[in-house]
Image 1 (tube, rainbow, N blue to C red):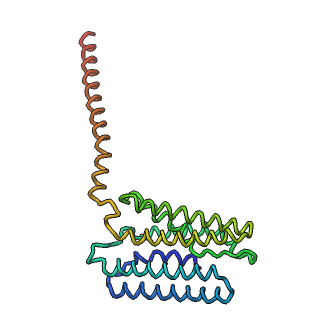
Image 2 (cartoon, rainbow, N blue to C red):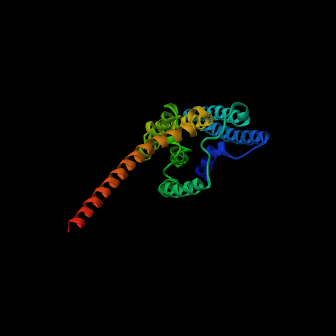
Image 3 (spheres, rainbow, N blue to C red):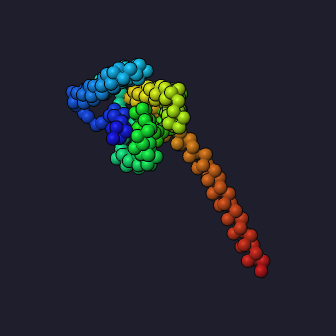
Length: 249
């Protein structure tokens, strides 16, 4: 259930809310719920003397707070600075998320129900589901920043999942720590990608995309026109020879 909720937690940036006040209270309430959960984890691991997890969850709370501040700024004041959602979610995306989630959960369910195995990463499944969604807009990315952010995001999530599975197999603390740190870094790049997509300068404009399409199609049209003219000449010569043959006979 937490994995499913994590997907929609990351997709809250494209919820269609027109009122700035409703949008502000919506994101602010989600930030409060997120921080309450983070504080609960900090208190729990503080009682268990888990210093590493206390530090990690404090960092999670700090990063979430920065992200929500940027999100509220981009959505509430978007009209004044020309900011808008450039990677919106559509209905077909929801069905695609569900199909991906079924496959991923079929792999992870044996791990979740095994009492001897403990998975501590919280958002890796959500990250895997978001891969295709972000990749659909890759062709519209302008410059290196957005593309590099997406690549690093994918690499860090893959590293987090890999080290987590190694930890499950070998039960070594080093892989557990590496997995948690990689997941935290992946969340930073995921948040960065979401915030960056609000800015039009990070995307190729529709006019430039049309120009690129016209450039790609124009050589094909010229080749086709040449082929048609050649075929037309061949047809004329063939009709001439045929007429000559007919007159000869």
